[in-house]
Length: 163
Image (cartoon, rainbow, N blue to C red; front, top):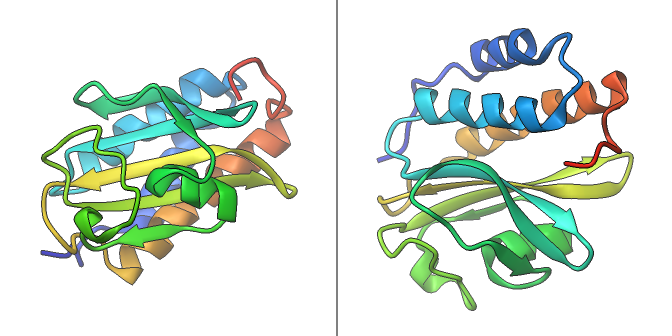
């Protein structure tokens, strides 16, 4: 069941209010994930993976414990990072090389975080329902990520130890 009621413009405004004036990327990623966790129905995991060398490393998240390291190019997150484009997967069991951190997850949306062409990491959202994420959801989450990255760029925290 796809969600057509989430107001992503309102979420973007709420995100801006949460992170405005705060330069700590760790705190801001934690608040962004909490906002998404509270706002999106039918999800069972939401979190960040940050780029560390040639792997994505687990950052702030909401949900069950997760995989700690994902090599670039592997799984949905690693593919989104390597290709630098959003991955919207209706059924993860149909995605070749899917990494099952939580066996209950059935669909996934992963948005790469790019700042001036530099990959910082990805935002990953999972659902226990197949085909949970619509194109509207994808665009809405991409909007939130754009706001987040713009804040990093404008706040000068792109090169902090966390991001």
